[in-house]
Image (cartoon, rainbow over all chains, first blue to last red; front, side, top):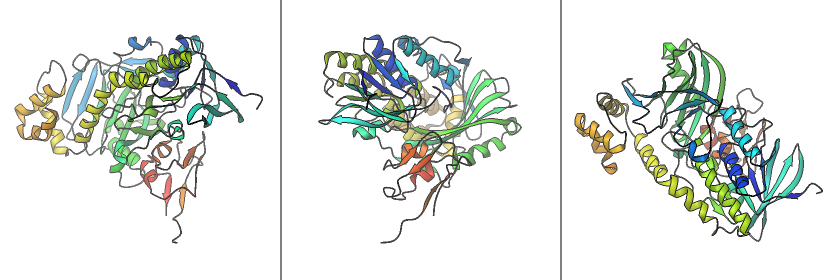
Amino acid sequence: MARDRTTDVLVIGAGPAGSMTAKWAAKKGARVVMLEKRQEIGSPVRCGEGMSKDWLADVGIRPGRWVNLEVEGARIYSPSEKVFEINEKQAGNEVGYVVERDEFDKQLAIDAANAGVEILLKTSAVAILKEHGRVVGAKIKQFGEPYEIRAPITIGADGFESQVGRWAGIPTNIATRDMDTCLQYRMTNVDCDVRYCDFFLGRVAPGGYVWIFPKAEGLANVGIGVQVSQVQNPADARTYLDRWIDKHPGYAKGKKIDMVGGGVSISPPLRQTVADGIMLVGDAARMIDPLTGGGIANGCIAGKICGTVAAEAAGTGDVSKEFLQRYEKGWRARLEEKLYRNWLAKEKLVTLSDETFDKLVDALAGVKLEKLNVHNILKAVHAKYPEVTKEFEAFL
Amino acid sequence: MPSKKSLHIESSGQLCIYCGACVGICPLNCIYLDETRITFDEGVCTRCEICVKACPVGAIEIG
């Protein structure tokens, strides 16, 4: 086709991980084209919009108008609604911002564009191009018109429902116990507290949690994640969320103004995220934290490494999977240990009864922890309910 | 050969919110999301019903 073209790095998907990868590849001197299938980057939002903030400076993201509000802490509610409050210091800045996610994604795309990235909107990848077993670009459709973009390096940043990895032959399948099905309403006229992000654990959300992330006084994202393997009937996510809202007068009186859904992986990361000529990043690489369901920070941290390696590979002309181990090793060194630890913790937590959750939260509610980590938590629980910590011996 | 059960994805927008949860979990990669249209490959689908559970709003029926 006449419009066929080439570039150094082709990034498929303009979410946070894609934009971050594209930006860093361009900053390191590569020619970069980034595709976005939608007409508007960042919209519609598919996100709870809670985000930690300690990692932002490291990857070159500055707070901007995408910061909706800054919370002081998180509150964990047990099934009988005992509360354990985590302040920002204890959590190691794990809690932080509630964001305007569409603005955030746009800001990262603007940063990428300013670094020299060319962005194609309303453009989907429909297949990857392979030669001698190596990925050499993608077949795309721009405004419905098909053509090819050839590139020594292709990046799959196409999110939870990633096609690129599957096309490239990288195993990305997930088990039903490693996925949460999620639904969220934006609700107005509710009794939320703008100082806290709230989490409700136990049978109210089997294998997940209910979240309240405040957007303003009286306005909040009210959502739920349910482990797919624990779904009994179709639409359980909606059924459980509606039930939770009905039982909480401060939310039952609210009005829904928006609704979003989606899948969140709560799996260990992929065993392999590179092949000849291709790398996967962000949700497509299953980098979502399996305990919290948060994916933005990990996607951006890995994106910086991915973009840097992409530019190096395109520069040297060596795009073999051996060379791309620099990315594979780089992101694993930074993220893998915590991903596995949190996956193990998730595997344990989903087996707990409401009674055990109540004891856990009750034991923690009464003590002041300097630093929140597994050891300190278990010590505190052991002091009050020694029988409960028996279930967690593997973590000590 | 027993005939396959019918699978129906309500993707006219009455139930479906185009979130992609079914697409992501399909073990055979036979569900496609194209902005506001969801289709599946009748020939590849084994009616494993995992997508039915993954859908947060109950837009997929197998019967």
